Length: 91
Image (tube, rainbow, N blue to C red; front, side, top):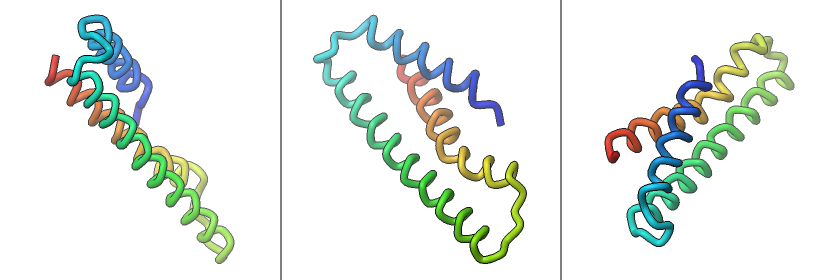
């Protein structure tokens, strides 16, 4: 799970979109709304994973930290991959 290249690709695609379209363009406004909604959903999912990890620890569970870390980062990586795919298909 390597989020670095995916995040850089998404940033490059967004910069390209912002350079070729006016900020008031409906396509840009819709994309910004979509990205904010997806980011909020990913942060919500990440928060739930953190809470589940804490509850597991408090109830005596022994999940390794690397497993917990991967589960916590998974929603953010999924969002980055989805954004990258969507932006590359629109350009």
